[in-house]
Length: 255
Image 1: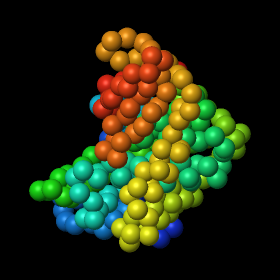
Image 2: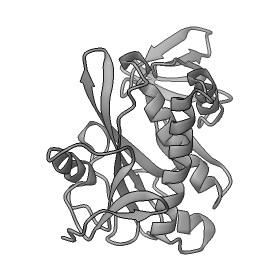
Image 3: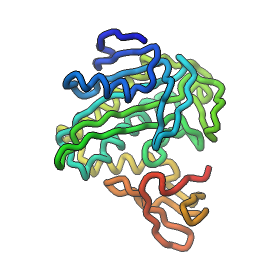
């Protein structure tokens, strides 16, 4: 494992690792030794135990994709506003990838999609203290240069499969961090309101228009996205006009 000190990359302190179990785990372990500023970042060429949401595994060919985690401590957010971190993290990545390909969207709550294919995912872990959000570790995996996927994941795609070109991982990392930090700092300074950020998020959503297939504990149905609340709750309007509300993992997108 590479254990170099953090060095500045595109203005952010980044430590690159040849291999680790999980960049989230590595960063959390590092943070136990002391405090760290916003956007301290760990990136790895390979993860032996990369994690997705709810403990799902994340497939990534060594050296071909972008796997990274960063820390932010948004003292300006309350616990009820913590979904804003998920929104700005997803929008920052979506905006960076939008420079390479059109049609990149955010699948609720924070997966990155191109058309009906998954380009990336996130695992966000939060520490809460009293009524304030103390610290977030944002873990992101992006399919960048991989050409063949062998896991049972149903719909992966890489940036190279879309564009036909190799992408420099370090350059893309800097672009993702820069665009995310711009949103974060604007939110902290009050030049971007939480309501404006939320409106941008909803405008970037995958399936933001039209009826599509979904499934919940009661079975399959067709619905349209009626709203995503500021706390992240998804509201679907089914064909009969009934509103259905869901927390994460309570509804499945049928693709």
